[in-house]
Length: 307
Image (cartoon, rainbow, N blue to C red):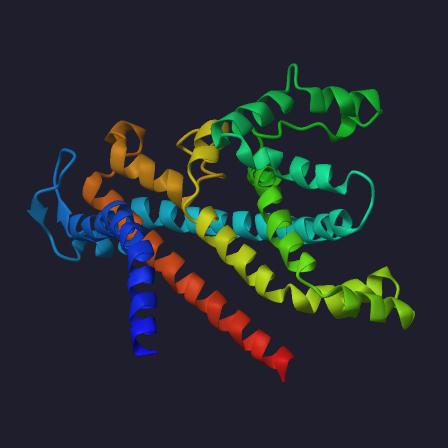
């Protein structure tokens, strides 16, 4: 028995060690370097003047810094809530539909994941073309059905821009949510579903009393992945509204704020690499605290359901 356990441990080590090395090189080391550089200031790509916690003090006490930081934080919260609602609710109900036995359901499963395989930059460009105020097909469609009064500059209005970008991300990665929820629904025993139908349960009762409690861990996984992805989102902002999060920073997220502050010159909103590293470190801390909070909340929720 002891020898079998040792063999199993060596087997696991052989699989885990390469992943650990890759993670350390490409994730852990850059994070630690970012934390180190947040304690320095200076011109150039590598700050060389040690200032301790001065960058953090300036970030939260000087108006030019904290106004943009809290603006990005607020935008991230709105962005996260929109994407979470669309991907969780839309992904769940789409998974319920394609999990039903009908002709072509396997094809629908594959089709639902197709947008996820596209580049984020491609998706951003496609949505910009669709919503273009001069030749975009969406405005032309509204005109065709007599709803031209609803037409607004979708990416040029601060009130709608964050919604448009969030919906673009939600559409692209909806397939991931569908994949997770479908796997959870497929894991429910057929005998449980058959027993519920024999007892007279309709579709809504099946969803509320059987399917939804069974996929609650999937809700946690999807929500946490969305949270991590949204608080590090950059490429969709770059593709659709630029690194300044136009219009008037209304779509500026932490990812675009970090890029602009760390790598742009002062004329274009740059704060220097040291301050950029400070923003990145704060992003890491927010994501860590957020993920820990979600894990605690969902574990308590699951314990309550199991009692």
